[in-house]
Image 1 (tube, rainbow, N blue to C red):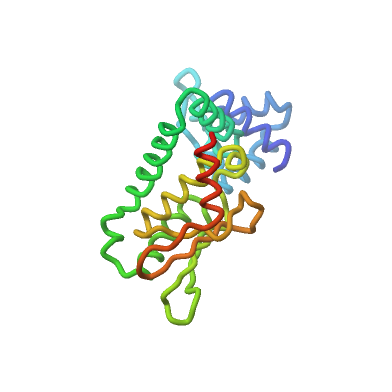
Image 2 (tube, rainbow, N blue to C red):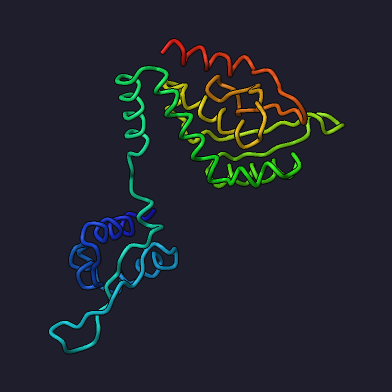
Length: 228
């Protein structure tokens, strides 16, 4: 982003809103030049006219520019640092079985958002369509495909890990995702690949009927949980 426009966003973040004249003074620029940058920012949906004011109650109304929600999202956030610290504290202060229960509850909460009771009544292929759409809304870049020509075995892929940078240290997040997928699909799914193990994606094998054996990657995650 252009340095001037970045500075304008920072000023608006700091002040909560500013007029062209106020921005021109802070930037030491001519108002016409400031308006040029404001037009670009408004075209990018990063600023909006928040309200109108009259100086001293007379004269032309002054436009007050404020940030949009899209602009606010551009500023750094430390959610990942906070989340990693909270997980670390949980593991230090609670016994493993309680940590395990917390992550299972989180997986159950996420599955509930997908209305699992509605998914259970669907054929498996329709269920997988709904599941991938649900996961993609949460940033997983998921897709599914039939693994054989007879439609008895399917693969579900997640090409993005929302917990990247944390799951290496906290394998409980891998297990939380495993529980989530199992709950959404309705049967235990065998994880055949994992980003945390340097695979290109997380992959889950799903059999149309009956239970499947857990993969080595899943078993390894469970071993880590028991050893924690």
